[in-house]
Length: 85
Image (tube, rainbow, N blue to C red; front, side, top):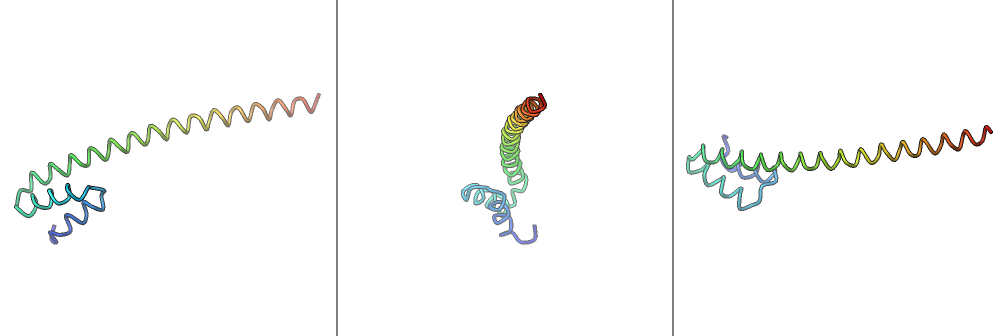
């Protein structure tokens, strides 16, 4: 990166804790790019785990929504058939 301070700023924007961002910035400034890259990849994996966990939660909620919508639809159909009788 051209602006070395941008490393910390970008890490903080990505959700890294201050301590982690400082550590990676120190590695980067010391020229330990491979170590900095490793730490960034570890953090990325953690973020992806959180994304997947959130996706599973959304999927569960979507299932409940679909089931509830089906129940409502069944109830509406029963009411309609009773009115025509």
